[in-house]
Length: 250
Length: 183
Image 1 (cartoon, rainbow over the protein chains, first blue to last red):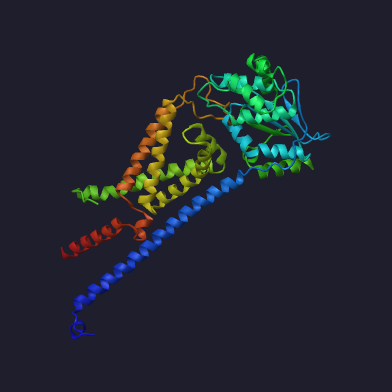
Image 2: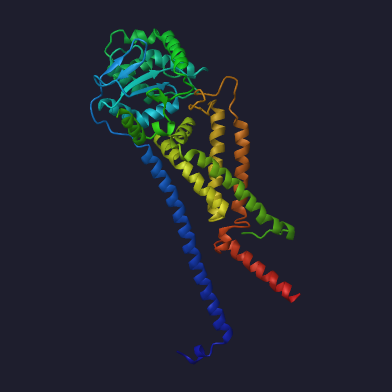
């Protein structure tokens, strides 16, 4: 160490001390800032993962339970001999929340029926009262009524939801629906003329009015378990949905 | 940052305005996030309804939005990472303004109300686009203020000595004290 360095003035030493303090403060600030940032991002990430896990759909486990299309337009999916508990699903092909329900819990309904744990009844109704949504919904509902085979109906039902049009524009055009029908494996020879001629449009409307009144449907999707409306929290959480239905089956 | 030639009154008022802006903006975010966080699918449906984003991205955004709003809101209220939180909040609000304007311009009748609302706005009931835009734009301005003048009074940032401006403020206070003692 040189002589000059040893002879530092007190002032210089204080300055150095201050600089060191400042550097330490700065480090501390960076650590605190980073910690807070990491915690905040982790909280957001955790919330995100939680939402995703809540809404995780089930995998297709078994072939579908037998499906029968009722003359009135409702569709029953149940293993032979399974009569309860009954899950009633009231949905509108044009309703975005119904599409979301199908995406999240559609497979759970199918699995529950396939496992013989429930009898699932679909009620495709038209809930909308204004154009263009009403027209879209009635066209889709009427087209679904042109499919008599249960398996084909289910495939067509899934395709309708997958191709749900905007609520702001005319959609579910008959030509599109005819090609979706082919995609769904609809074999009936008069399917095309039935869809294009909108043969069942009136049936769809009267069925919707009747069902809406009788079942006291205020919005779609509505899901009932043995006649009691299920909480939307439950129906959008496949795991909880399964638990409640399984409990009712006992 | 540029030091503005501001009066002493303004200098005492500005941090309080920031605090008020933080509380309002943070409060709105916490409430709106809180209403959504237990029903993430609602948020997903709402984001999809705008038809601005591809399905998968809309789903991801819908799921992340509630928690993001809550966390940013809490940060603003307590005044932690104030400037970053303020910037994120401003961007969020700006995105909402854009989305609503988009919906309006494209004639979407959003607020699907698929739960108990009959699936659409009742006949004769119009979406409240203008009101929504004015409100959200006001919140954009509050966010801008927070970004410009962080962190305000009663902020954790200041207590933890996190912001440069907080450090400067401490210096300023120190100077004032010195002046006073001198006087």
